[in-house]
Amino acid sequence: MSSPTANRVKDTAKSAATKVENAATEAVNNPKKAKNDFLHQPIVRAALPFVNGGLSGMIATACIQPIDMIKVRLQLAGEGVRTGPRPSPLTITKDIIAQGKVLDLYTGLSAGLLRQAVYTTARLGFFDTFQNILTARAEKRGTNITFAERAAAGLGAGGLAAMIGNPADLALIRMQSDGLKPKDKRANYRSVFDALKRITATEGIGALWAGAYPTVIRAMALNFGQLSFFAESKAQLRKRAPSLSESTRTFGASAIAGFFASFFSLPFDFIKTRLQKQSKGPDGKYPYSGLLDCARKVIRDEGWLRFYRGFGTYYVRIAPHAMVTLIVADYLKLITA
Image 1 (cartoon, rainbow, N blue to C red):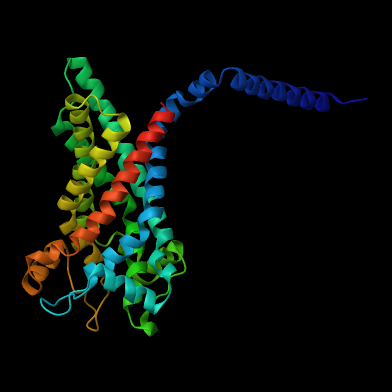
Image 2 (tube, helix red, strand yellow; image 1 turned 90 degrees about the vertical axis):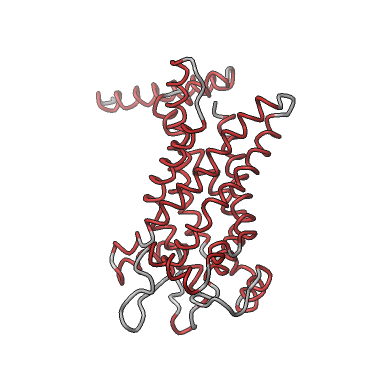
């Protein structure tokens, strides 16, 4: 004879099975309602901008990682010297392959993916959240959201996300620059987690936020150029060229956003790379004490134009990344609307 406890367990299991069966039947018979019931839960709606942002950023990074590797090596070439050899993206690529293998172009991919999982999740999530709040406020006033408001949303989202994602960004730079050192001095990080662990152990946890100041400014500049100009360009294209398809407007707006993101953010990206790559010299001091010191020494020793060295490569890295990220994010918004 069954015990009361066994009967209760059996009844609970039957009840759960019935609920699952009913939910599955509802999903088959009315998939749109089932989808909306889940996607329109308050918690899910709040999380979707962040989930969509992270997924779109990671997909984009997987596509352009080799270009990012070449961009970093270009920025570190000829450090402290105004004249000398002028490497090109092609020569950098040949050198990387000659010293190892084609897959070395994907050095730091794990760090790049982690960075996107943290940084892009936060920046696109915060931007969409801020923009939705501003849009709702504008609708209450009977007006439209302004470019200045979009810019403020982009700047705020970029700054917050950069602080959160700086450790992964620093690990990425360390991994990508490791191959420039003599073989006996290379760290040979196995993964982003190995890099974070070893940097923390040898330099302290505060070292994970090295270059955070220029990283935040760079992210604010990039977000201002990318997200603000994307949203504004798309709105203007919708207003001035209503015959264009939604996909064409998205593609055109993302190309415009990629250019402005590159133009505004490259000088800060350059300084960020130099600060995050640096290590202590024989005298126990770092080459640069901070953002302003780095900028001053680059101007003095290498010239103003050094900040824009590799602009073409940077644009080829930023623009496709922006385009893939924004197009995927738009698509994810569409299917989760």
